[in-house]
Length: 165
Length: 436
Image (cartoon, rainbow over all chains, first blue to last red; front, side):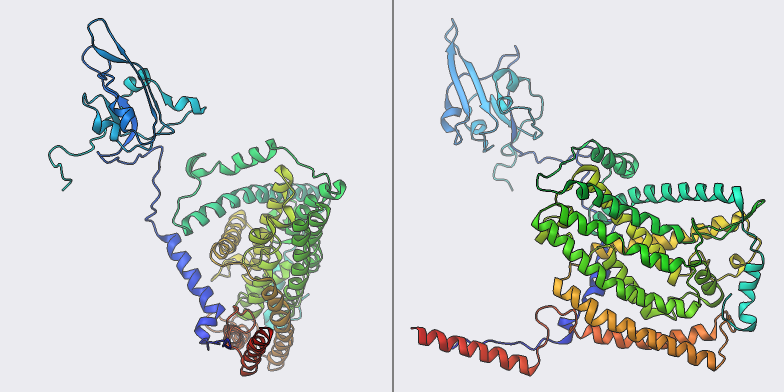
């Protein structure tokens, strides 16, 4: 079967350089004069985060300043990225508490399941995103670091509007 | 001094009668001061131009541009300069070191010394005499510019060659071909200006325009050719083939780093300044203030000097802005398009234009059309040439617009070409079927 070369007749308007150039110049000039630049002045002006934003974790504490965590082991169980390390301990009165509680923020995919599954409302994802460290090890947050975070926690759903309407 | 008749030369006469130039020691001191001032202004200007380029590119692309260093990013050039000085100078093993070091200087120096002959303001009366406001008021100003500006290509070619790198070499070769091609059209276009002014001194060209009106109207085509050639000469988009990032990494300065790279950058921008200043001087009346005769005549006060300097700078900045505006609008030409535009279009056009302009000037002089300003502040000579040029410009743009010369790949084919393509495809399918 013969391959036919289809040669289109292009109108001069399509093949013209001068007209294309002039319309291009007009376009760039219009954009240059346009005062509505979309840039956000990031470090000076920060983006308003959604109340459902899932960012850096935070461990809530009770009135005595202890972590609310009872080391039930649900969060490492549910975690799809396997980023939570929990070693449970027990005190003299039989209360369980975490001996080691570490979250690797690098491995975390910020799904928020840990917050959903937590029976004590202890571990939360938070409305915070500016994490930077000089080493990879710095991204493994231990219990002390998790409890000392102060940013607001994420509302995974609005209690007043559970279906998100 | 000028071959103009009778009343036309009144302005020139008044100008030159006043001319008692400074001599001896004051002359030397004034020249040194002018050298230092012009050099400083150009270097600071180049630094500011790099910022302006980034700002304008940002605005065109709906961004904001550098704004962290200093107020509105004004200290960005200082930060860049500091970075370039602190960076490591790399010397490739395979490079030929003496030329590798010499090349940035060779491209840098001609870019700066071209500015020496450009008159940037009205002369200034001092108690030692009249001070011309150009570093060197050469009577052969324009020839000097033609001679010096072609030296800039050595820096680029030698940079490309001495780097011993295929991309650098290709960039250097491209730039030599490009600059040689467009320099011819550039010179030819300027000949029209010389025909009209009857003098190669840039000061005389400015005075001619003051008396008659700016050259951009009576020599519109010449200006168009000169402008396009100036873009090609300074290696700016849409003619930046020597560095063509997408094909040649960075072209001739691929192997350069730190301050040596920066010198190529400074050279590019000072070339832009000089080319803009040339366009202003040759076609936009130099330091002339439009619409008045006040600035053309003595006494040469300081106020007049400052105002004309301001106008010169305003015109210069307009052209520098045009450079940037075009850079951030137009894509790069293909190499064959560049060459065919240069040789098949610009050169014949420039040659024909010399003949037409020369003929028109001859005819108008024979008809004794007055050159000086007559009715409504318009010179009949100027207007007649201008009308001729507008007619020519319409013709030229219609031809250019047909897409034959700088065609994209898909311009309209002739019936013969279509027949040939069809035959090729038929032959290929025949061969393929026989192969089975």
